[in-house]
Amino acid sequence: MRTIRPSSSLANVKYEIRGDLARRANEMERLGYDIVPLNIGNPGVFGFRTPETMRLAMIENLKASEAYSHQKGIFPAREAIVMQQQSRGVRGVTVDEVFMGNGVSELIDLVLRALLSTDDEVLVPSPDYPLWTAAVNLNRGRAVHYSCRPENGFQPDPQEMESLITSRTRAIVVINPNNPTGAVYSRAVLEGIAQLAERHHLVVFSDEIYDQILYDDAEFIPMATLVQDTLCATLSGLSKVYRACGYRVGWAAFSGDVEPAREYLAALDKLSSLRLCSNVPGQWAVQTALGGYQSIHELTRPGGRLFQSRQAILEGVRNSKYLQIHTPMGAIYGFVGVKEGVLPDFDDQRFAMDLLEHKHVLIAPGTSFNAPYKTHFRITNLPDAEVIAEVFQRMEEVCDSYLSD
Ligand code: PLP
Image: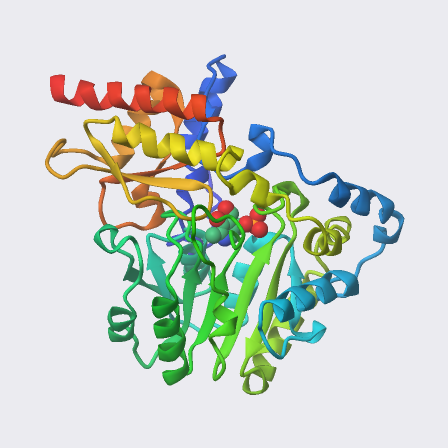
């Protein structure tokens, strides 16, 4: 029998969040088990709703959505993004520099594909949202990981980042607020990154999809307000802040020193044309989303549902004999680690599988996010606080079982 082989370009591409563990969880669900899906930040699964005004905006424009739109997206959506950037103090963005995509996911691929030639390097955080590493590899580049260490509160170190730059480095990826760690980067760190990008003429890709999901007194600083002398792409979308993952709406807004990047932007325009346009109905929700009431703050302030469930993660860790965490200040995850020395042979993948098989909870191991250590895992704080408390109980039992093995 002749086998049909996949492209060798995928050999290096991994995206384990929907990999073997998730497949096993699906299988178990089919067998009738109730699985708690803490592996994906998908608000709709946990009863979060997209603001009704956005749904209505989309419904009202369904007729206008029957045709392809411009490859960069519909004008009102891109104008709304320009207005948001301008109101945040980002200078020089016009509708020409805004590209709509089928989620930030599609744009991560497109912005890299338009930039990279074989063996070009991109600085990517470790841990990262793994699509970034995957998309660099898929587009023939090399992801060079810079560390965001637990002992530094998962903040990157611009000096260390600079030491990784070579003549092949083309871009730096920043994810802020961060997935998976929940870190919100300080002004000093962001300024350091902006300066080194400018010194070395690197493109900055700033993934800010969690820009308004902040806890306590966390301050979000848009990268584009700090980058003047090189090209900066701000990537964001409707999936998280507006709880509309299924609408598949994201955007990339370019700012900074745009003129020397005209050929690059033309290449991105060409790639956008090849896929004709992104999902049109969803684009009609953007102006209402960005220009309307920002209901996300009701969820993140004390007493709000996301705040309470994030507190439940902190509480679960506090009560655990085994676990520790650096308090997440943004996004919708806890990146939990094992305390030093308590479980010497801890392996994140094995723990995730044990938790799934024996306790029916699906989590994402830290190594799936390109972390170089096996001591961490990510859970989302999207379920209610009571569910999270119950999950921590089950995790404790699995850890207990390791000591009695
Ligand atoms: N970037 C980050 C940091 C994410 O966490 C996600 C989804 O979880 C995405 C991008 C992709 O989002 P979407 O394609 O739904 O816009």
